[in-house]
Image (cartoon, rainbow, N blue to C red; front, side, top):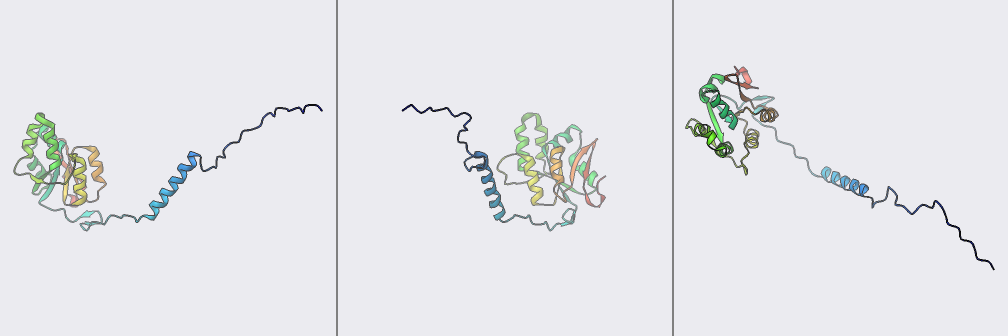
Length: 194
């Protein structure tokens, strides 16, 4: 009896995993994302409480004497433009103003060193009110934004465009900045800005 011929089989595909298989990484990631989305939907939503100080966009807590939260760069630019801060604020708002400085702004001024010695001396002026804050770090921008979200009774004085953009998102908080050789305030109710 002759030997049976064994022929090689051509073009036989190897066993491959289906692209729909659970073990494929992309499918695993999709499944995890789906689970996370379902968890998020199951969690209760956090809706911020509306502030009682606001009458639509009008802030009823703002009124003379004004409390002005001052940023580091605002003090530096005021010194550079030779502006007396308290008097210029009063000229701008036509009312009594109390410049306020948070611990973070004070810490930032102290960190800047000898170059800003005059600014630090000005910040320690008895006319300036010191406001304690419970911030962990010493980043003044975040501190100021947190303060105005918590208490809606401040005007924020800053020359930082990025910070001004963040303040605009908080309703009912005016922003003071330097233009030319005088202070200007934006979003002030009753047309106090001059």
